[in-house]
Amino acid sequence: MRILLFILFVVVNSSCEKTVNIPLPNEANKLVLNLIMNKDSIMMARVTISERMNNYQSPVDIKNAVVNLYENGTFKETLTQYEYSGRFYYRSNTLPLAGATYKVTASVPGYTEVSGSDYIPDTVQMEEIRITAAQSVVWLTKATIAVQWHDDPDVQNYYRVRIYDINEWMNANGSGGRQKIQHSFEAEEATLNIFSDKERGEFYTTDALFNGRSPRFTFKANTGSNVRKMIVEVSSLTYNSYNYLNSSYMAREKSDDGFSEKVIVFNNIENGLGIVGGVAQREYILEK
Image 1 (tube, rainbow, N blue to C red):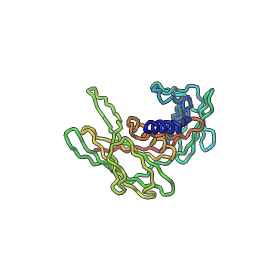
Image 2: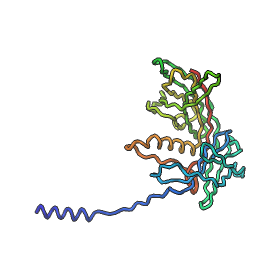
Image 3: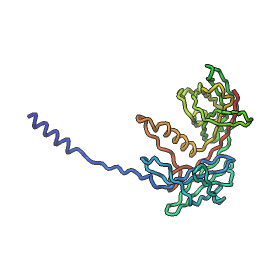
Image 4: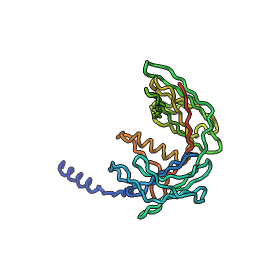
């Protein structure tokens, strides 16, 4: 009886098996157009070919693309090719203006034309930014940075904050140098209490919980005692640039974590991959 039951179980179990084929989209060999447009700064677009996920080589630069720029629907210029540090870009002479919408198209022989568009936000209206430094040991200083800005209640707003050390030096010949180094930090907000104390390299937020008000954020960073100056970069983002920059940052953060859910990087390019996004970025120098 036991043998018959076992045989019956095997037959029934095997008869329930079903093969399901899941079609996965092929994202390789597509045009990739990337351009983050900063208010009042020269535009630098990059056009490449997408690679498979298991290909660890650098993306292939496209050198024969025709990249056109449109401002508020009107043709503005064709971007010129520019080489920097072994990479090829397409550079404009146009400085993007706050409130204007820019569309960028890229045409490459053998591929469907790709395009993306976004508007340029205005600079964040700052209310207060200050730093307090306390030396913990001889070589280490704990810096607390308070940042407060005013949020426009009439539109949905998106923000990014990054912090840098400024390393300055002078040699025996009297010539010196200056280096900006991105710094990781902790983000806290006492009123909302929604952020953990995990260190991060970039801080992103929307105005969903403080629309129309003036939120105050506190950032903490451990810096070398020899660092006298720091930079706080506050950027206003659009929906497109916020989702792309935030998702790509999260994807980098979780790439080595096998237990975390994989992040899909945001894309707003028609017929291809990448981003055309607007930002308004401004730096503030603080002395400890």
